[in-house]
Image 1: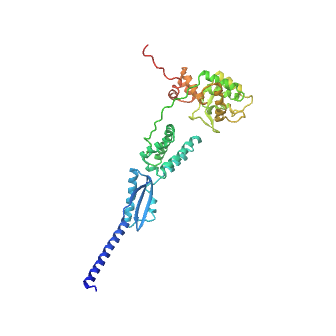
Image 2: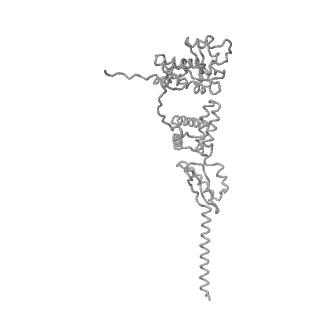
Length: 393
């Protein structure tokens, strides 16, 4: 039979255990209510994790794991943790997502706005380059906000592109991003430009060898003697003689020529089904040689409209440079034994040979629609380059 002493001891033990249990419960509740919010990385992306009221919470931030973004995430964690301790925590998380730490436009959203802005200013073919970049941005940056892109991430994106694209293409794409952020800075979408110092080293590329005089004669002879493609012989001769861009010659109309075909005005171009301005958006006018003048007069019909094209397909359709290159140019060059170079090499050949022959670069530049500096930088080497001086016998 238990004594009164034993009963008192048992009561004290039970009370002690209850006190310990209550303390543990209070401690767990306090930890649950006031537990710290941790910053974690999941597959390279930052998120927050914490517990409250017996529940576990996880909130993704849409930020890649780096030093700058960890500081941003820590500030968000401190906001949530303060609300927990002040009993102002919002378990729906709406309060913390209403003004997220990554506020503003995402990288993709910003660039798409820029593309829409450029849509009214650039040609459709040029716009394709802008749109082609969107997929790369979405894959790399996902939902990250443009305002929080770091220079390190910009370099990492460049390196990623270099694994897929040529250096020249990547350099062009980085230039588009630099233009986008410059536009965004002026409109207050971002405060810093992470692309400003991102450069791409493009290795030098040997320019195509110009057609020699003998090669030009063989090409012309090949076209004039061919039963199928002799129709293009006049086009090829004028192309080689003027040094103009293919689109400029394809877009040439009779109204662009003097009544006696002694001079030409070049201010329009035809490409991909569209009549548009020249590549530099500048017009030029110059006199033609007697040979080219007579060639144009001989092919002008007795009845014509000023808006008619000088050169068309055999069926009278606008000129298609792709069909011409694949169906006529390539076979003729192979047949006459001339090393293949694209039709646009005719422009390189004209400029190179003109400068090499001693013609004034300023006059040549006026004819082809480039600056003298561009000609000297891009075409002098093609013409043979400077001569190495003999310093001893």
